[in-house]
Length: 605
Image 1 (cartoon, rainbow, N blue to C red):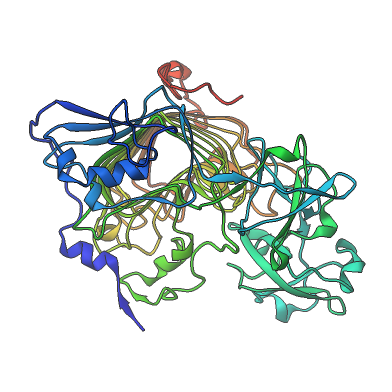
Image 2: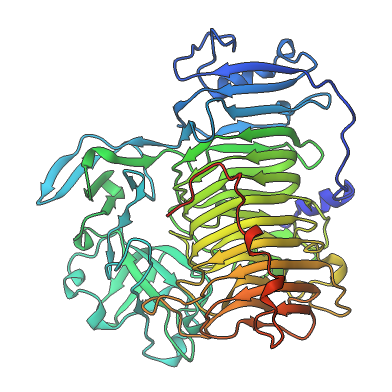
């Protein structure tokens, strides 16, 4: 059945508005309180606080708590375990021009929303490996605040690298277009698997052969050791071999491969987990939710508005049982679109989530947050969102992207933009999904300000701005964006054919009016891990891909790369970049690049 898209509805509502000026309202503040020792019968006062943020949210829906004031919910220090996503709807918006703020009352990071519970009941299985029954299924695991590794072959060589990989092969040319059979070299796979193939096994693969740009996480249906191939339970994004190379892959979640500390194996059929701890088996945590906080208005016309979350720490969230980036073909979403090719560019509905997820919002503040140990994206803005402020925040150890803004389909309404991302540090990006991983990814969104940002240790990009090269200029919403005072370090660690600062399909047709701006950016060395690099073109500092036009680029310094420091068509204005002969370092404002002295958290080592 062909369905009408949400973007068409948004277009009827008039699209994005310019930043609004709020009319003067009372500056009076009404304070309420949440504490770990609060009562389910509390009234929110300092002496009788609520016990949870959900309890505060529900109480504030009652008009008796709305007293013509800005409301501040003071969340006292402590751990608040989240077993179910905390959901905010348009019913939870600030009213009559007033705001509602949920803040960590005792300082940034002191009030912690924990999306995990300890795993208990461990018994010795053999040697240093423990085993226990569990009451839920999860797809990532943590020990003492660090992500565990799903038992894999071949073993990784370091906790913060993804390599090494095996490479698929093809016995006959007719199999080059296959998406669900991966042919392996017999010497790469243990022969004993032929007798007892593990039905819990999964594959992580950079599909596409030499041009591997995305990673698929796919359960395996079986293995044929006569013809030497694995069967994937879901099609990969690209074919698994092309004319130049096979695809990089490793196999995981098999008890046979649990052979070093920090690895675990999940027997899904029997609800059993096996783990070899690095420190103590008593420090193992398993996630309870994929999303800790969700803000979702009921429609683009009924948004969640004037809410702020300040100083909260959010730790631990879950991944999914299988993952592929986007649909494989235009129109596969089943919805009617002006540009069905965009189906290939956005996340499929099952993967549209972050530890914090926003949809249909306006004037939301996410400030002084500490987001860590996510199963997937840290902060995800989906479709209709306006004027979201992300500031003074630390995001670390991210399963996927750090911050992802995914606007609507091109040509169907400009529904996402006027966001600010400032004074924010994003560290260790793409731990579970290295393919297309980015510290900040902006898609089909415009008039955003990104400033004083650090992205460090990313499998692929530091910052990316994307649409599609097929989009006409009039339908391209990735316009009016400004990037300044940015530092990108240790990017492209597991990939090639990329740039630390990357654009795709932006302003691809003439005329190329200059309406995106990049200035005062330092990009460190972009050198990938030799054991993990893709067999394609190398790494770049700035890569304006598939067009990438209409940019002013000034005062940029790029370190060592394995390809070009800058790759683009001749459709941008570049001044004072260190790939030019007349680069003048005195014009660089090094002391202003990166997070400022007001950043509220210690910087990651």
